Structures are given as C-alpha cells and as structure tokens.
Image (cartoon, rainbow over all chains, first blue to last red; front, side):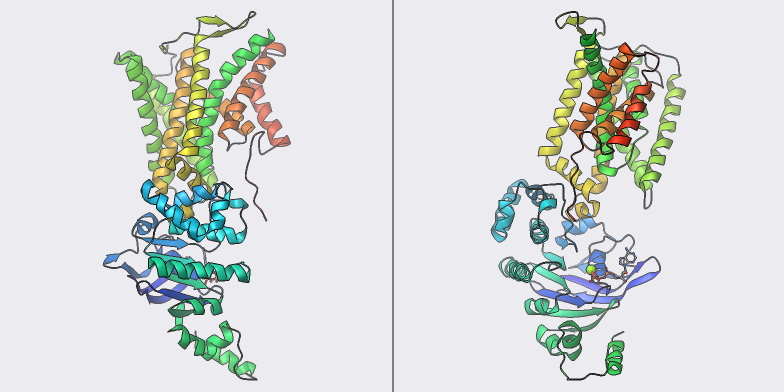
Length: 255
Length: 291
Ligand SMILES: Nc1ncnc2c1ncn2[C@@H]1O[C@H](COP(=O)(O)OP(=O)(O)OP(=O)(O)O)[C@@H](O)[C@H]1O
Ligand SMILES: [Mg+2]
C-alpha cells in the first residue's frame, strides 16, 4: 500500500512539509486533522505529483513502486485518485461529461458499469446529468468530484476536505457515502478534514498535523481522549479554567 | 450588384472562417494567440506546391501529404517550443509564437524564394455557376464554402461526441484537474496544435489557389481570421465561422459601395468596434461563474 517516507516539500524557500511519514493500511480510512495552513493539502498534492520537483527529500512508495518524481498522469494510472480541495470540477462540461472524464483512462464498457454505480450512490447526479457542472450547488459539485474520482475505480482515494462549505445534513450524507464506498469496494482512503468530530467518527486511524509535521497519531478513540485534540479540534473544554499561559505552553509543545 | 457582393463576400469569408477556426482551437485550450498560425499554413501550402510541382505527385496525394506535414508541424512546434516555457504566462507564449512566425517565414523565403508561384488546384476560379439573376459563384468559391462547412461540422462533432474532444475541453478549463483524470495534457496540447495547423493549411491551399503562392501569402488572411475570431468571441467555433462570413460580407460591401482602397481597413475597424462595444464577441456564450 501507500507509504510516505519522511518527505519534505518546499514552496520556493518555504518548507511546507517538514519530514512527514505515513502509511495507509489497506481497505481502511485514515484521517488527517489539522488547522489551516498545516500542510494537509500540500501532502496530498505531493503524493499526487502535482508539485514540480517535489518532494525535495524523502520517498513515496506504492507497494514496491517508487512514485515520487512520477508524473501525475502515471500516478493516477497506478490507481490513486485525488478529490481536490474546492472540487475543481470541469465547470463548462456537463455532469455526464465530467464523469466520463473520470473514466478517461478506462475502457468504455467498464465505464458503463461504473457510471451506474456512481448514479446509484448519488441519484442526484443522475437527475442533473445534462446540466453544466458549474451550475450545480456546492454540495452537488462535491458529489460530482467524488463520483468523478470513483469512475477511475481507484485503489486509493485521497479526499481533501469533502465537507467544506456543506450543510450538516449533506456532510452526514457525504460521509455516509464515503463509508459505503470503503465498505463495499474496499477502497483505501485518506481523508483530510477540518471537521474533526466527523472525521474521527468515520475513520479507522487518525493523524494530527501542525506546521508541516504530524504531532499526534492514533485510533479515533485515542485521539478523542487526547486533551489537546478535545480542546483545539473538538472544542471541548475538559477543565473549567485553563489559564491563557498554560494554553500557550501546550500549543507550543506541538511545534 | 448587392447580391453578387454578398455572394463573393461569403465565399471570401469562408477562408477567413477557416483561419478563425484554426486560431480559436488553440486559443480555447491555452489562451494563446498564435501569431505563427498564418505562416504554419503558408509553409504547408509550400509543401503541397513542392509535391505537386517538384515531385509531380497527384492532387490527392500531394494534399494528403501536405496536411500530414501540417499536423506534424503543429504538434512539433508545440512540443519543441511552447512546452519548453517554464511557468509560462500568456504574454510569454504569445512572444514565442511571434518568434516562430519569423522562423517559419525565414525558412520559406530561404527554401522557395520570395517570387510569386502559381499554385495548381483541381478546381478553377473561372468556371462559374449562375445563382439566379446575374449573381454568379465560382467553382472554387463553392469548394471553399464546402470545405469550411465540412470542417466546422467535423470539429463540432469531435468536440461534442468524442472522448478526446471532451478531454480537450476539460484540459482547457482546468489543466490540473485534467491531469488528475489521467489525461496526458502534453499530448492533448500537441494534438490541439496539430489540428489547428491542419485547418489553417486547408485555408492556405484555398487562398493560394485564388492568388499566387509566396511567403507573404497568409499575412492578410491571418489578420482577417483574427478579426473574425474576435468578432465571434475567440472561444466559440460557431462564432468564429459566423464571424468569418460576416467579416467577408461587410468587407465586400464596403469595397463595393464605399471605397476599394480602404477595404483592408474594415478588419481593423471591426476589431476596434467589437473591443469597444462588446469585448466578449458577438457569439460568446461563455459560462458565467456563480459567485
Ligand atoms: N502555491 C503555494 N505557494 C507558496 N506557499 C504555499 C502554496 N500553497 C500552500 N502554501 C503554504 O504552505 C502551507 C501549507 O498549505 P496547505 O494548503 O497544505 O494547508 P492546508 O493544511 O491544506 O490548509 P487548509 O486547511 O486551509 O486547506 C501554508 O503555509 C501555505 O501558505
Ligand atoms: Mg487544504
């Protein structure tokens, strides 16, 4: 499965990832939590080979194949799919055309079955299949982005903030679908989320990222029990009064 | 008089339409104005000329070879020059096409000289058909019209119904996302340039056969094609074709009723007028982002 070994990624002179290692267990959902600018999207983009000449240090492996320094197109062909932050659907193509682009590298006959499967997961997409993707609502676009990735029949799916800007009800629906895909098709998932409560409820293992490195890792139960996670990510205050000074110190410990 | 002016205007407009189509295909995928478009076409016409006159091949063979050359030339230029630009911006890419234009022009002048050559063509400009009244249309004009319409329909079908055609549109809208679908963006760009070059070459053959062939052949048609494309909104294939016809007719009417000397100015006037009045072009049906 996918193994990230101690990678460092630079944007010019700014180091966005400072030694990140990660292993995705097969058929499981792994979540990454982290505040804005922690480097979560950068990690996904580095894995997908979307950043030129990155990672600067470290290696990325898919089974026995080294995939860093490969082109995005080749990485996709090896069975990785990325649902980017902000959906990035093809706005001036119809819903159906968007889904067909997901199946670009596959045979037409196979794609037909997958289309059925995606429509079954997201009936709303079927209703709107002739509509331009740019005219869909944010939630529908998110469904389309996930559906488009599923059309590749990926072994591994990276989902970057699928709940961004969605109503609580839709968030629930999307996570339900993610669970279902994982359970029914055994797709390995990497789930990047701001919505910590939802992510921890839906994953098998979780990491917490701060300033370009992982500062915590564990099962959802372990993470939910952690005081820092409770306070900073779930917004639960365990003690009645944590003094500002102590809080600062605790946050500092993570860097 | 009016009927005749409109008819020949439409016929001339068809070549503008082809040039506009060629420019729009490239503009759609990369937002680059290809200033080398005309000279890519001119060079392809010279290749056809060489096959016909120097090697004495038949028309079908010669034109097929020349079109193949046009495709290869377009693909090669994209691969060898435009792709080399690191972190390209649109202006930089346009400058590259200007450089290519000079290179191709120099190449043609060096290889074939700048004297005017007769370009043999299987249909003639002098056999005319009566269209009713005293309006006539020449065989060549008919062929030009036919070729323009056929190419337009082909392109329309290609972009609408084929996987590669849709992938081209996808690449134009969002390159990163296209890569994430496994679409080989580099190949798509090469294909785009190749196709565009072929369409331009068709225009060049038709233009060379009404005129004579020399390295300056496509200078004016490129300008006209560009005006037509602007008129049609730069991104719409149908718009480019209609733009070509409109420009041809307006220009001819102007030449007939106002002044032949200033006929060439019409294209400029059209560009300026459109940029002032409706910068998105007459037929742009550009998708409006929801905010
Ligand atoms: N193209 C870029 N050029 C320069 N710096 C960048 C670029 N993209 C991201 N960064 C920086 O890298 C760091 C990590 O960004 P990243 O997008 O990975 O954060 P993130 O964890 O995904 O945050 P969010 O939750 O807000 O999406 C940030 O400090 C950001 O400013
Ligand atoms: Mg992000």
